[in-house]
Amino acid sequence: MNEIKIEKMDHQGRGIGYVNGKVTFIKNALPGEIVLEKIVKETKNYSVAEVVEYKKKNHYRMEPFCPYFAICGGCDLEHMRYEDTLNYKKEKVENILTKEKIIFPSIEVIENPSPKHYRNKLSLKIENNKIGFYESSSHTLIEIKTCPLAKESINICLKELKTLQIKKGSITIRSNYNDEILLIIKTNEKVHFSKETFLESKIVGIVLNDKTIYGQNFFYERMNGFLFKVSYDAFFQVNSYITSKMFQLVSENIKNNSVVLDLFSGVGTLGIIASKKAKKVYSIEIVQNAVLDNVENKKVNQCENVFPMLGDAFNTISKIKESFDMILIDPPRSGLSKATCEFLLESNAQEVLYISCNPLTLARDLGVLTTKYELKRCLIMDMFSYTHHVESFVVLERKKEERSSIS
Image (cartoon, rainbow, N blue to C red):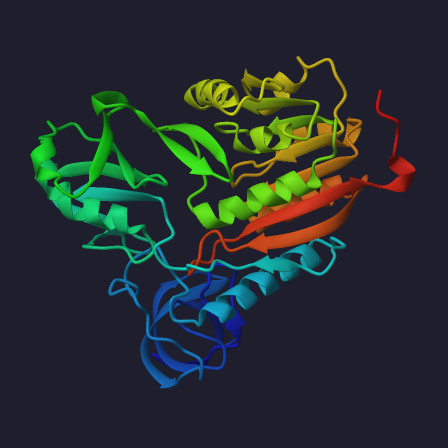
C-alpha cells in the first residue's frame, strides 16, 4: 500500500495520483486529498487503485446520499457538492476541446434544478432473484432496493419487481410525465405477472423478449406543449427537465421558413420542435419503431411539414434531392461517421446544431467540421447529474468564406 496525493480528476470522475512516477486512477478520491491506496489493477502504463484510508480529505467532500455509492457502477460524483460537479464537467469539456485544438466560446452551463429523482428510465440486471446493477468494472451484481436518481414512480415499481419471480435476466423500467410505467424484460423464464401485485405502479405495458404480454408496448410523453408517442425500444432522453431546456434551445436556433435535416431523429422530438418555424423537416432514424412513432407524432402535433425516413443516416441522406439550411444532429456516443462528417462539409447547410452525450467524439467530429464551420455557441446541460457523463449542445455556423447561397 502507498500513501498518495490526488492531483486532479480524470474524465471518468476518478482521482489521479502518481506512485513511483506511474499514473494511478482512484475511485472516490478528490483533488487535494491524501489517501492510503491499494492497487487492484496494474498495467505497463498505469495502475487502478482503491482507497483504504483517507489521511486528508477535501474540505468540500460530501457524504454520498446513496447507500450503494461505494460499490455500484452507476454514479461516481456523489461525494462532491452539486456545484462542484458542474465545474468538473465544464473543465472536462474545456480540456477535451483544447486538446483537440478546437476554438470555442465561453461554455455556458444549464444546471438541473432537481439533481435527484430525475431519471425516467432505469436498466437493471437480475441474477439469483436479486435485482440491481453491476459493481463498477465487474459483473458482480449489487442488489438495490432504491435508486436516488430515479423518479419515485420507478422506485415504487422497483419494490414490486420481485413478484415477477425472475431468477435471471434483465429489466428496464420506463416512466412518463404521468408516472405510467413500461416494463421491458429479457429472460428465458416464465414471467408471473399479476396486476394485483403491482398495486402502487401504473403499469401500462409489459414487453417480454420484444413481445407485448400485457397492455401496450408504448406510452406517451408530454413536454413543452407537445405529445410524443414513445415505443419501448425507442430512444428518449432520461431527464425531462433538461430535455425541455434542449427543446427550447432548438426552437430558438431554427430560422423561419428554413429546410431542416434531422439526423438520428428518434421518435421525432427535435424535428417536430423545429417544424413550428421551419418550412420542411426531413427526419432520419434507423430504429423502425421510432420512425413509426414519429409518423404518429407528426399527426398528433399537427406537423405535416415533417417527413420521417427509415434508414442509416448517411445512406438515407442521398435519397433527398433538396438543399438544407440547417442540420440537427443527436448521434449515439460513437458520434458521426467519416462519411456523415464529409456530407456536412459538402452540404449547403449554413448552420449545424450538434447535441452530444460524449465530449470525446464531439471534439473529434468538431475537429473535422470546424474546417468549414465556426463554433458560435457551446453549452453543457446536466442531463446526467452526479455522474461523469456530459450532454453538450453546440451551434456551428458556416464560415464567411465558406458560405454559399441556398438554392
